[in-house]
Image 1 (cartoon, rainbow over the protein chains, first blue to last red):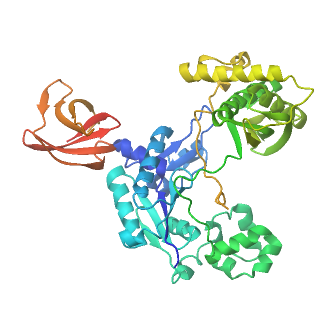
Image 2: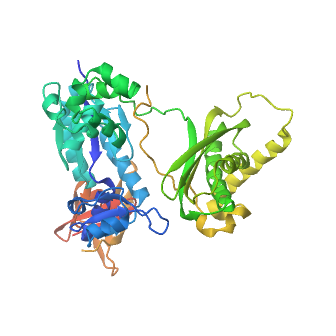
Image 3: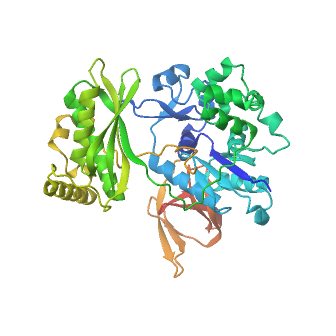
Length: 415
Length: 76
């Protein structure tokens, strides 16, 4: 028996929530934008009226405003969005125990086993749609299909507040006519490549010989071909499924460009403090430090280095990251964003190789200091205690560990 | 209409339910709730927001009283 999978997508999530809470802007073009002063000034979400003016997600706020002069811009309120996201999740949970979130506003649900109780996929979908609309005041579009990929395509087809069913009988006319870049994991460069082989629609891709695709796209050719033909058998994970953490990282776009080694040092320490705190919270230690640097033209490089021993000490992570930075950046350009990441994790307490050349007593002391700082911050707030270094520029100050935002994780995390 | 939060006198039952008994308007006039006819989750498109909606009868008039995150507001 084939599976019944729903993909539930909240329409214009951020903008819908803002419009719900501010009835006075409901009939105006609205865009939720990041703060321009901190240079996160891009459109994060927009409502349908703004969409009509051609406002696109991801473009700069000024660009959007020039397209649509009366545009109302709202700054995001992530706490509220997370609350809504949780409420949608609660509604979905009523119907199945197999729910997997994809970002903050999308859910996959496997209801194969619940259709006995509730009827069929379409019926469950319409109940969820109605419930979300009545109880939360936002709309969802739902795709009903027999695999995750087609369900996702279905939820994108009709918007807002709609349901699309794609089954084995109609997927050829519904899915195969869509442009190939609608498919998950076909981005602009893959699209260009496929277009150069005269593959324009998902149908073209599905009917293309598999060997040809593997030859030109490698492993991805196989994956995409399976996606296009509906041979995607990945399961929807259970609600209590927690994926193992592979790395912990933070990145930050700074309010002003970084122009000197000192600036970079400040930021690296801010990021490392956040990462250190998170590692200690999860009781994990890491050995590899990765640094990503983005210049003012949004080009980025990634470099990594290995530590001598597993650690969650803030200063060791920061020193390593700074070392990597000094050896990989020549200041031909200024820096707009920095990211630090610690991977190669083990659970603290696992026996590790000690070194003759490291002062382990000192390391123990450093660990205690870090734990002490964590406790002070927990009780009196993040900014109650900080490094002198960070005071050199107030504008760079930030608390990435607690202003954290969730991004979609990989589709393949179960496999 | 602007969304205004109001003070409410609430009875907590032993099951942990909250039942509003009396609302106190912004000018500190008090109105007792005569009857609650319906309780369910709902959004309020008029006032902007969502929460648990109590359909109440106050002085013979039907009003919606919302509870959102421990704060109460009225949709008239």
